Image (cartoon, rainbow over all chains, first blue to last red; front, side, top):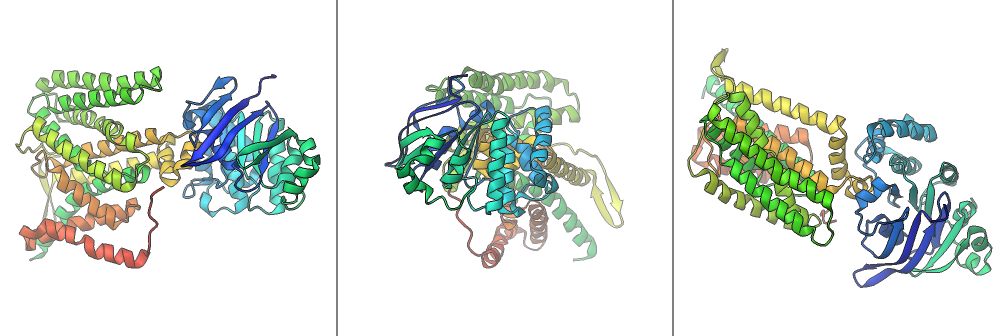
Length: 241
Length: 346
């Protein structure tokens, strides 16, 4: 179990001429919550998209001991890698139930039915709204649906991009509680958050990203206690978790 | 003009409108999933009618060679794109779908054609020969351009259309054909003579549209196609490959085209290039429906049929021009009502 589930080596991602991510190396241990914090534009979203395979990148990504650099995005989903993107990317003119069902597109019908029950148990709100179109949901419900849809794929690594963005504080708390629950169920989490204070409270390990490079990393408690980092990032987090 | 003539023209409009509705639905589906305006949809219609006519005459249709040729080209293209990232499984699947299947169908058609097993089996074989062309054309012409703009895709679609028309002339020759009616004879409803074939067209269209409705509402693959249309990135993030969705959409479009061809062959004489006008009228209906609403396209297709049948009665020399001119007031009205539409250039 010592080998990390996800291991990223020297990742570089360039948009046109600009390098948004430069030589980033990160690991995610099995069953842990790893958070990547940093200012707006530091390259956090780009990093997640590149790990998922949405964006092309240079460097090496290995998942569960196998290199996945040449694995297309859709096949990464089948292997157990899932991303809940910042913009949620739901199927807004389709029902909540259809969104969830499609989340399990790469799983068997039996697995889909079983996982759907678990997700309805975890998010009773989605069960109430299952016949409603996704586009008519509130912000919090949309985030729940995005997470539910990703969980339908039975991910081993769940990447969450700004899950608290635009949500009311009470709902942010629910979302973070769910993330902690997921770790208990054995899902490894890679969490990107502007709300660094809240992220560090639940994370085991943290990376700080500055201008596309890792400027600091360590146990989440140590990062939270670092006076320089506290000054640069934790002040911006806005509110306690 | 008396009521009998009006009823006759309306009947004509409904039959033609049903065919245009099928074309329009195929165009909407392909556009929603892939952003391609499938100009060659009419070619599937024409090729199916020509294939059925050949089979009914007891000849092996030239379609088999066209299918094998397309299959070989598609396989070579897929293999060439694999030269750097070799993946044996993908290549094996591509060989099965693009080499083994067309050759098996070709042999089957060669063996079956002289036996004259009856209309039903000939229709099934026609559909089996035309439908695989859809996914092949997608892989050959459009998959490498998947990320291109709508305009580039439209130009490519015209290229495919012109290529297929040329191939149609080479493979089928310039003679027109007509195919036997699915339901023989005719009967009277009041003063109106209704032919069995018009009933067959309407029934088959309604059944096919209902089946498509079921496919999109109730099956996982149908929902995956809708998901691609709704949010391409979202669809990829749940593991739906846009290339696979494109192949399915083209397959469904070719299937709809093949069935339309079986239906239309008994109504009018079909030549290798007849598909274009049928496709264009379906396109007019799709545009009237704003390239988005399936029900709207169905209604618009009947309206196109009405304009066509009444203008062919009053001014037959201008009937095509009047149908296409009908799109102008619709576009003016839409641009006034809808306002600015965001350009889709992801």
